Image (cartoon, rainbow, N blue to C red; front, side, top):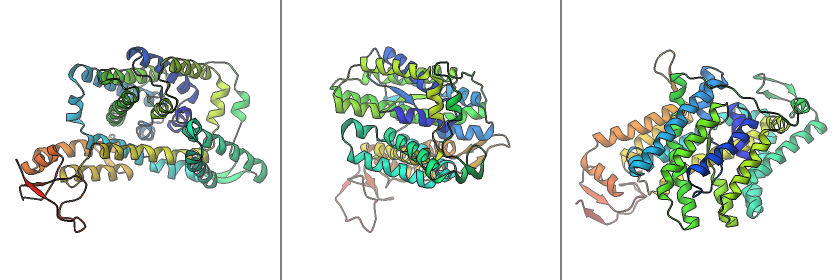
Length: 438
């Protein structure tokens, strides 16, 4: 279920998909051991770092710098897991309340819109559109397991469609990501596939470190904490067991998996919601299945020919897939807001979140110095996090009280309005009952 995204995101980040598949298996085994086989889950490639990687490559196009920066973020994530295990999940909620975590997840997804528009979609717009529509149809027409792998099936469909178009209509004249120019080229090239051996090791490289690049990856840690917490709670609900004591372990294990994977040049890892959905459909919660899946992934990673086949995925196909994946990531942020009944009638929530999301989607560049740039997702995260806590510190008491109690309010009236959905004083909002502030 997670297979399509697991190798799509390494391609987008310019990393070796073969190594990503192999290290996802290694990270999964480590995860299961650390959580004492209590949280069945598979660790695939994390999308939370895609925006940071693009920004890092704009500074210096270096695989080592990319993986080194993510490695440090993995260490921070592991440290957060230890803190949560020792102090409880409430310590994270105080620093990163749902309004902040939801915003960070949303801007990570929507902040990647420019990648679809500027890089992938224009490589073959009609194949991109056909691939996107294939996901639409397969998601609702297919049933059970097949519906859950709609992304993978649509990717195969788009791949085959590109191959057929090459043979029936000839080469395409469009933007070529390899050259950065518009030229005439084949949609699919199997030259690397023909040259690749069947058995061999993937390409490893050592991490490199640069302070400015490291800062760009840290916002992803916030999203991964929220993501892991949500996944553990989802598994707990399905298995009807109390897994809260393992949330810290799960976050720590995810950090360890990312550190191990990136230390040899692999991609960052995270638990995948797709596999949680498969568990719900099959009612199979045994960790043994995940050990087997991890072993299979490691074997796939030992076949360079398999990696070359993945790397040959046409850009138009990636355009159709990523437009959905990035959109789904963004909407997960909205899901966090809805589940936690975040009240956007309160300026403490509304103002910094709105500003941060626009800065990320732009993406807006802000030069701190000539050599240090905050841009897009990183800039948006800083504005969301510090803006929220700044406004909370400066806001009058009635705003803070309404925030704590999850109620709306009217400016300066000293009263709280029950409910969280409507904006106080909106012309479309009928007057409701009011209660005196306690």
